[in-house]
Image 1: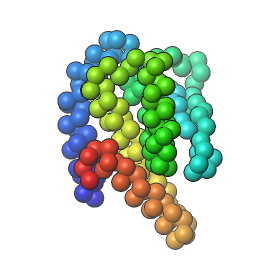
Image 2: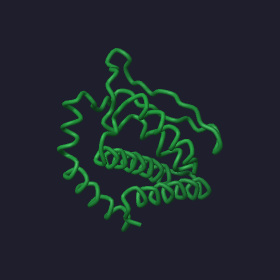
Image 3: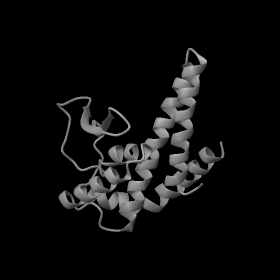
Length: 158
């Protein structure tokens, strides 16, 4: 529970500290499109491929996201210990889109990675609670613990 409590405090502080930068990025046209997000599909713990979840193509826009869009890929690659893919993706993304112009952009990127890990931890906690047997419950509990460790790392609250 300590990780959850500390991450909530860290999240609140981060949003307050980054508010001006978030507003600046929106004015620059770098804003969040919540209708579709790049997601990695993990076919094994060794490889992954990119696909796009889009809830409604008629309202899908081409805006860059304030979360840089790539946080969805990066956090899962970090989760499966493929930091090489994480770094390659960020380097390539930065060449295509100049969206990391200062240290606050990296802080914002880290915030969104932490947010995504938080969401995954909650999903697995619900699955754990609803599991039909002890084997499944232990599996989902292991996932929750892994994502909590990732949250602690992103929020630097070890």
